[in-house]
Length: 317
Length: 268
Image 1 (cartoon, rainbow over the protein chains, first blue to last red):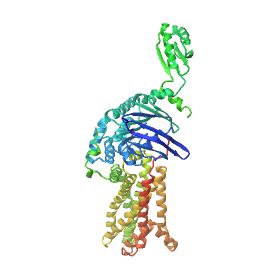
Image 2: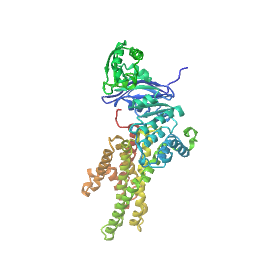
Image 3: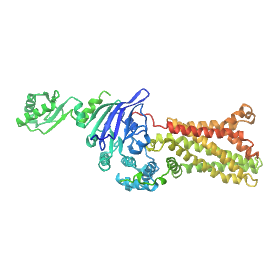
Image 4: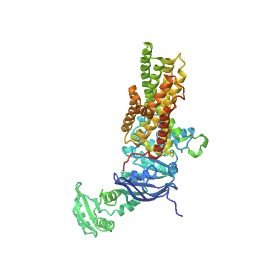
């Protein structure tokens, strides 16, 4: 049975004067998915979110969110939650007042808004600070309040635009845990825009790379990494006394173009691989090392990671 | 999890404009800005009332003129406060990066700007309430207080609606809050400038200018009722400009609010 995508976009385009913000964005996001949207500055990530959340109109194309076509923007907004990039918060309101206000705008009664605000503050770990002025909140607390605001209408789709921007590692971890809980506990679909590849690798089921307003790649992380066709090499480390033997063993393996000592640590080698069969070739190289009784301390295949794919696909910009 | 909107009885949900207006009024008054502005307004009106009362005691000013002068100042400054609050409404939210979260709600943009406009008008109402005791003190004993208060409320409200709408339109289109506030203030001063015309310049083309300008026309109407004791229907032609300006600019503000409230142009 075919599952209807919760977000569908077809040929979305947006220009600001001569600047192309988005060109032919086509995508389909399945229910319960966490889609990571990657791209350098100016790639069109925020524009894509603003179009899909109906606060910016596209010049071309059509889309639907949660089964609602783009011709009914208020209905779409009723079903989505958004944490905008660098969102501002009214410093003179308390966190609870802020959430109550937004809950009422989404149709809650006063009493319902009060209950929703309390529940959400507890969910994002701000129950103790709900009565404090937002002006006194840290960056991480504001971001968590932003998540709570995005969930105030129990949305089917949540759009997060750089939610960990400016957070320390602990704050980033908390935020990513919240993102996971949105899909796990609420069953909502998440579209996560970020610069941080590690975040995408950690929480996203699929990834979409935007570059200069166009889709550069889309798929699972391994699919995108494979499609990137970035130059591949392997970096490995053997005990320093075995370096020469390791170089000879690797050089003899088929598919390995050359083996050179890597800068930095003693015993480190870089093996440059050739062709599409490079991963298999490296298996042969590792086998050769094992047969020669050379212990491998560490091994990493470069060019197969999302970061390599990202750099390869966006390097022109 | 959270209580959903679907579980609430529909009859108890407030309209979007009312919720936005309520928040604007709360922010304005509980946030302290409205109180500070009202305090400054009171101090100014006290100084004006003291000066006119002194002049009245020295027979430099008739009692009716002193009431009129105080009322004119109250209308001018009260509407200025309204214009400034409206001029901050959209551009201020945009600059503080709080506009996006408002636009992300299902509430229509027209309802958002209407709520903000009504919130801004609360400053005029507060200014007018503050003015009442001053008018009563200066005008007591000659049967003028009631007429003066009604005239001030009617004309002042028309001008406040006109200026708040003007401020809202500027705020919708302004690139920054500073531009919005400066432009609003500049236009207000330009509109008030003709009130300082000498009598000789208030004839012919000068009179047409006074009649077309909603501020001078409105103040002229109040002046005729309070100082000359004219009837309400004697100078109705002077009311055309304030009524038309209030109606046209309110509609224009509604249109601008519904169609042109946008975020800044940034590509990410």
